[in-house]
Image (tube, rainbow, N blue to C red; front, side, top):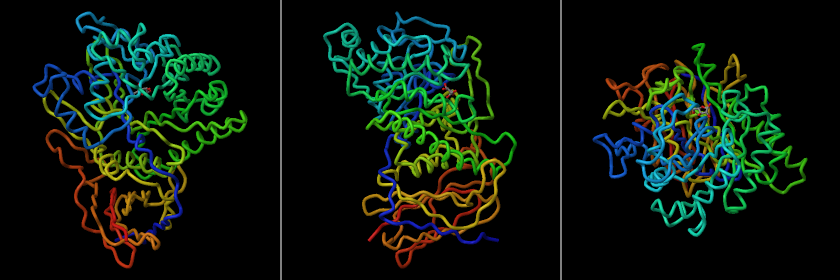
Length: 497
Ligand code: AHR
């Protein structure tokens, strides 16, 4: 049995804007085993000269991540950056309160910057607007970005980096509307802190870009109202506003879970509407864009209390095929909103809700690793507006969803098309109608599928859910047809006339 064919109509002139490479960002937090035992493990047989795990960095390489947010997350709201600089033997060991863990501060700003340079990541720092002060945030900008000659820049030089680190992206705190956040305050108080920090930070380096902290989720009572108030007060200092989203399938309803993409589209559109509304009210020329700086599937593992331990096992979520399809859905949504989503960060990169897990010297690539790789290597170009006609279904919570979720990027004489088949048991065909683009052939095609929605890679069976070469793509007369198995995600690059 096979579903009725879906048609994806694309047109060269129907563009949404260039896809910002920074939407393929990541997030590295001092949480659980993300930093220690994850990227940084000097005792490991895989450690390089800087103490970083070569096997993990090698596995991260194909993700080609861009903006790498650090050091949190919730951790950032209790972190004092000066604890993490200078000679390692003199750095304080701290009891940290976001995750109730032990923080030895052996990895800090300078180690992070070195790692970014090694990995070609764009540094993105979150300042502490929970227990920290606007002035402390401003001093971190001086430490990172000012030429030697003043107090904090000289500290950096003394710590071995005479040249500035040139950190362009800065987040003004994290999830400050959440009652769990260290230093949580109401919107009007956060807005004052953020505005004060923003002014001093930009006075220190006017080239930096700032992300105001948006409401941390669509389910929050503060959703939208927080964002409006913060954007109005922080004003033109806000280059971006942050969005966060973690989704899950706690009721084991796969069709509903796969339709969550509808609500990601909607969250983006609502937040963009808030930005445009405030811009209009302020009669400002400045448009704030969206920075989706935490996103992922996360619902199975809720172990968040480190009980005073160093590098405890926290939220080591195991990912399956349906999770991977939802991760593909997030990325497809960002592509479809290339006009307003400029930065996004997969939360996180290793061990903590991550595509990569480690166990001693071993390493495992999880299912969600693959859609990221499949899309990131095809990310260059302009997003095309996808018009999809075809069979659909009514989901329990997210309205009507096409069985085929689609997006497309027009590159240099190439067309990249991404297609997910959300049907649990039926194959489906997608006809790509792209007359004015003139498809001439297939350059590359990959498919991600597996033996069932819950199939997950494990140390025993590491290749159950992986991307494979795809052969079921045909082209003729400038068009193409792609056949998709049930519960699958395809990434195809076509050559154009
Ligand atoms: O990514 C894990 C945590 O989730 C982050 O620290 C926090 O911002 C969010 O609640």
